[in-house]
Image (tube, rainbow, N blue to C red):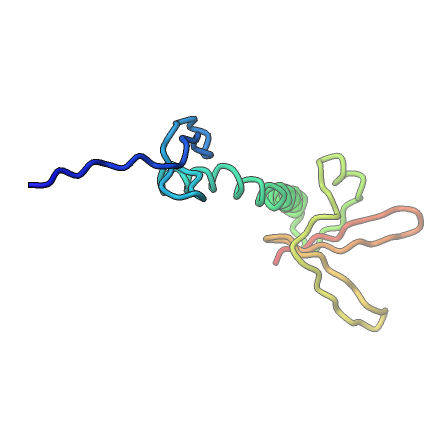
Length: 137
C-alpha cells in the first residue's frame, strides 16, 4: 500500500481578491480567487457594479422624468398638455435625458419628439419662453 504525500506548492499564499480577505494556496499562477463563488461575488460587486453605475444613474433620471411627465399629464383631460419648462425644472425634470428621439416631417418643418418610458415630449419655444408638450404613448 502506497501513501501519497501532498506536494507543497511552489506558489506562495495570497489573499482572495473578492474582498473576503481569506488567505489561500493558489493552484495556478493566475488564480486570484479562492473558488468560483468568490470569483462571482468579486465580479458582481466590483467590476460589474462600476461598469453599470453610469447606466443605472441615467435610468434613474429617465424614470424621474417619466413620473414628472405623468404628474402634469394627469392634471389635464387633454391628450396633449403644454407646460412651462421652468415649472418642470422646479420638479427636477431634465430635458437632456430620454430614451430616443422620433422625428416627424410636417408642413411646418421637422418636429423632434423625445421619448421617455410612457410619455413623449417636444420642446416648443414661443417668444422668450420655453414650453414642453407632453403626450402619453
